[in-house]
Image 1 (tube, rainbow, N blue to C red):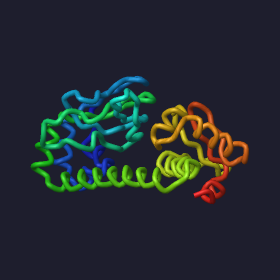
Image 2: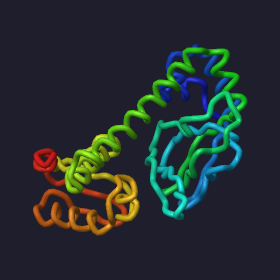
Image 3: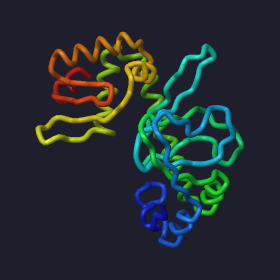
Image 4: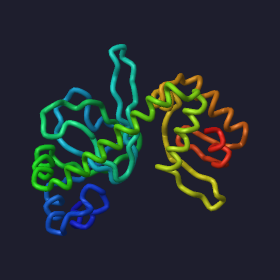
Length: 227
């Protein structure tokens, strides 16, 4: 599919470019679609492109020396990734896999580096994105050392609500997040059993409902009270 130059303005790093500059971005971009469960790239492989999500959800993770999966982040529409490794030839620092059907735009890494060199304002915005992701990781590390397991789970639910929540007519919030409890546990550094107990507790209290494919926040105010 061919997109108009203005289509790219929805992505924050391109929002200040002129129409002619956006046309240049369109020329070097390619749309790609991936079914659920597909690796977009693998940790340690050569970096080939920068990606911008049009629809769907992507999980980014690393594998420890013990062979355990450690989730770095979940990414959604309008986000770019990876967030590191510009202007050098370092390999992919993590693996990115689709957890839903995903449509994205890809820009070859050399073309993207050249674009940032020509347009320093894009480099600045990319640095801001990287800074935001670094802050998120720092906050997660801080929560691991200072918050109880239950509080970490509640805080994560509220973050999902803010980033992915769909307000319903009855005032509840629907989060389409096809994530296993094992994924949830890996993301925040707790055991799967702790996630199971906490989610079941919140469900029994009428604060949330959940299934394998989504979380439904029934009373956000009560959830906030637990933070």
